[in-house]
Length: 291
Image (cartoon, rainbow, N blue to C red; front, side):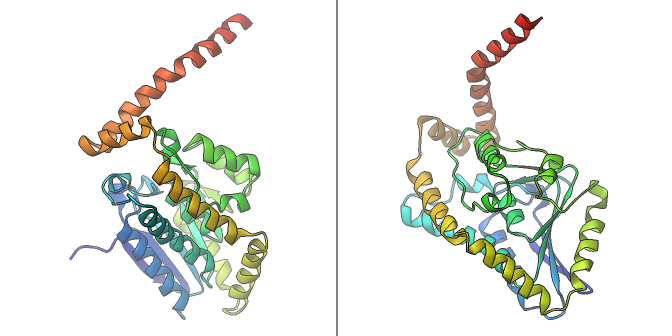
């Protein structure tokens, strides 16, 4: 029998929800998104547990974002289909955000795109010291719009802009801890223990107090027009995906469909390296002149 792509495991009063596509670095597919929604619903109603942990199976990463191999074949030719897909994905993040039980994200390796949005939806984050965050599509030269701009409410403005505009691993894990994104940063081999120990601290609160405290905190963000910002981002994302095509992006997806996504990335990076040369040569001249 095939193992589920989302696992729900209970240890005492703690529930662990595992993203279980390790060969794909737990990349999001419609099935995984729906499975995670169902797991959060189960966590919300589970009277035996007081806190949840979301983690990713495998050593490569927590979540590599939406599976872009699927993006090349999924139908998205109209604004309606684009809106439906964005709403389907954002519903997951809001389920985590609004879950009455506190949710801890246990992050490691690649945490990009949708994986970053899952992390930003959590109440607290424990990160392994090999964690890398960012927006993959920026680095590939594709048009990108924030589908779930929760980072605006959790990070300093210029930090959020750097993440959105420069791509993956723009800021490393230690820098992100300085900005308050992570509650703990530990060696990878200690991630599981550290997340469980933080969860235990939460279970010491009464099953009434913790949900009320979470709701009070969430309401403070909502008073800052968080919901309006998310709905605006949904619409801009859908419009950008439908109308933000360029010769460069069209060429990328053509190669992805005809050959492979890896080949499209390879060709895109080669083009980027060629375009970077004038600036790199100028930087080199600055260094030579300073000698």
